Structure formats: structure tokens, C-alpha cells
Image (cartoon, rainbow, N blue to C red):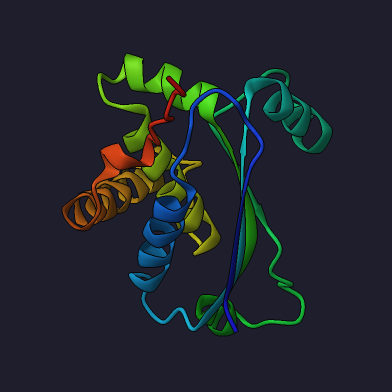
Length: 164
């Protein structure tokens, strides 16, 4: 059984959640040997992200993404873990906007990158050393190119209709 839950609790940008759901499912489907998943994605603002960052990691301030892996490593072997994914991603839209400006891209593309990055962490990728960070970034970029070819990432920015 697979389950994907997306909660949009921020007001920084209007997000096309149905498209984000389709994109996330495609990223999950592109993961080798993944048979089932339970994934929660929380889109939050800087204030909530700073609270999560402090409460769980004891780091001050906001950040772009925090990944929580809920797989029970004591009960599952590594091979079983590769077949399933259980976790949550907290993604800060304020940071996506800020980083998009810094890297001369768009916030919807940054949002897609954060989803991919979090899923890669849940699949066992690590970015704590320079070599592992480069390997993870290569896979992240490959998946982002693949998803960009399949999905109009610019449409993750939902346009709101204004009443006349």
C-alpha cells in the first residue's frame, strides 16, 4: 500500500498541489525497487520551519528542507528498507523563493528539487561528505531533468484568480 499526503500550511506562494502530487508520485515511481511508500509533505513558511528546525534538530533559524525518516531500521533489513519508504518532508517556501533568486532559477523548480532531495535522503542517499554530496547532487540533477521533461514545473506556481 502506498500513501502520499501533502499539506500546504504556508501563504508565501500559491502552489498547484495536484501537480505537486503527480510530480512526487513520478519521482517515487522512478526509484528502483521501491514497492510501497508512506510519505507526508508539509509546505511551510519560515516561522514554522524555524520551529521544526529548533524543536527536532536544535538548529536556530529556517532551512530549505528537513527530512524525517520513519522507517523502523531495527525491524527491517536494509534490503527491505529499499523496497519501502516511510517519512516526512518539511519544505519551506520562503527558502525556495530565496534560493531561487540566489541560483537564478524559479521557486517552483526549487520546490521540485527539494522534493527530489528529500526522497533521495529517504532512499539512503547521504550528503554529509563532499564525495557523497556530489553523488547525491548528480542524482538529484538527473531526476530534476527527467521530471522537467515530463511536467511543466512552472505550473507548480498556481495563479490565483482575482474577482472583478
